[in-house]
Image (cartoon, one colour):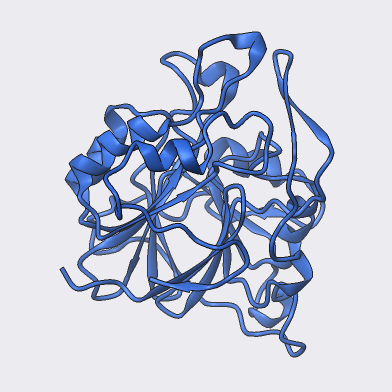
Amino acid sequence: MEPLDLTVTHVGGPTTIIEIGGVRLLTDPTFDAPGRRYPFGLGTSSVKTAGPAVPASALGRIDAVLLTHHQHGDNLDAAGRALLPGVPRILTTTAGAARLAESPGLALSPAHSPGRTSAHSPDAGPRLPPAPASSSGCGPARASGTGGPGGIVTGLKPWQSVRVGDVEVTATPARHGPPLSRPIVGPAIGFTLRPSRANSVVWITGDTVLFRGLREVGARFTVDTVVLHLGKVQFGVTGPIRYTMTGADAATLIRHLRPRRVVPVHYEGWSHFHEGRAEVEAAFPPGTLTWLTPGDPSHL
């Protein structure tokens, strides 16, 4: 397997900047200052305890936002939402796309889901051009430089794909809680990223528990690097129910996948995370995990 050439910057929580195949992608944008409490429904809530290691004003060019789900403040907060109209494309769940398109400055893509093809189809949907760099070199690229309006939101179901520049982006299954919890917690997805002519992918799991759908990703793709959303999310009001993977869950998944790199995110910065770096690290053999220093671009 030829290693993929990519650079990942961990901004904090689930938020990363991924540079691959000539495009720059922002995942789950969260840029609010710490200290605020965010309601998550059914009496659950969480306090943000750490701010972003990269301010929104220093992001530079962003070609697309990959939003695993829109309904929780630890994946899309107020400052992250404010960025969206200035980004050429936002890829998310179909429910999230419909809801976000109601916001000023955002609109559904013309067909709503231009990637109605299999991840293995020779035609993986329309190619979305990378955004040009801004003249100042900072701040997200504005839509006026892309040849069309910005803030175009595309909803994807699992296994649907679109291209952003030379990178094929495919939605993957995620389940943000126990069986039958989706009507309560809402939908979520992950994403794989495959540059043209590459035979492997980067996989962003999204917020998910361990379930059969994750193993299917390993059956469909050769995973070079996996970005794991962890944290053992729990709330006092719902007792022992977990809404994301534990370190032990993730270790089970990784033994199945056997990727080249394993990058943990979504384990710090919020009060509803119940496993941090120490607990996650203890679940894996030494040297398995690649820990990123927040704010520092890491070439993987």
